[in-house]
Image 1 (cartoon, rainbow, N blue to C red):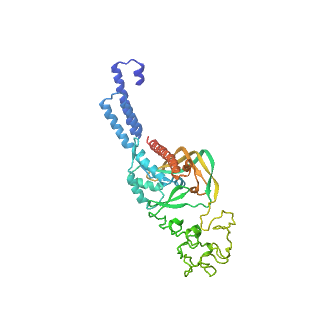
Image 2 (cartoon, one colour):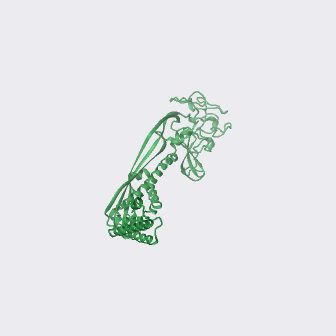
Image 3 (tube, rainbow, N blue to C red):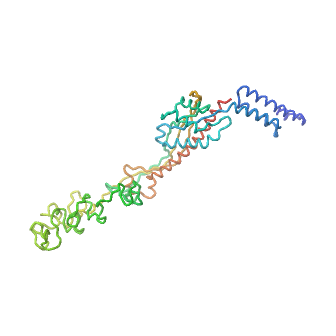
Length: 440
């Protein structure tokens, strides 16, 4: 008909007669398709009849609508989608929330607008029936899904499983850097606003929470801090001892100027010198009757060392250090020893390749279709590498982000979000194509 209208010079009546004849032919053809159980073909033939004329007649519109409605009633497949699952290896890398977000993205976007001849079953009803059938089991077998389809009146079930993930680092640049750290450096804990933080060389990281004004375990410092912290003048050499000082000082644990009455490490247990001549209990001599009443040392002692200055340096307040460390007064803070260490900053491109498997089952639990969908997405990444606790490193400002877990996490999250969107689209398109391919 189309060729005759274009190749010849028909009259207006002949053109109209050609349009009518072509429309009737297509409508009859659509009826035959319906009779042969080919609803999608019938729907398409009826649509062609509607488009013969730019302005079809009312009779043609009604005839086409009736055929198409019958085709949809006879050919529409009710589809029920089971919640997305993932293999343990995938869940270990991406976390359990990835499959939940993928399921949510499919349910809120792709499953809400199915093509013609596909109808989505109520997901809440399906999940309710599945919970009753599973009875605490974790595995959703095709046979069990088939029973759920029978209960909700669905024709096909869709089982989606994220099967594998491959992560590849490409175009990697590695730069080594040196920095100085204190040997045996420890992190200090400070409390601010009820939250405890670990501090090392001015860098702060949250480690625990506790009551405001206490350390993370809720204890005060029990007198183990420096003298100004109210610990009775006990320095690092005290080992945190808390026994009271009978002389009001620190029992000889600090240097002379810290209120220990001039006693050195060897004076423990000696009577106090209260400054009063010959006071009872005082030791204005040597505490053993060997000194005079004027508080000067007696024979064999110099008030710094104990009897005979055994093992002590001849310099005031100093001791000889066999290890070669700088001389210091007893109880004074140790001179920090430092080491030079190396760390590495890494830059490159990270690529995710995720594969999901889709299984279609009928109400008997029989597999009627299977396909795979995949997504490959890339993005930049940066991270730092150090054989130890990076919290003790003195990092340059532009290197701190390499060891910041929030920065590293945001880089991976951006790639995973792109993977999720592409994978969801591929799953939906593949599922619809598989279902429609089974409807003639």
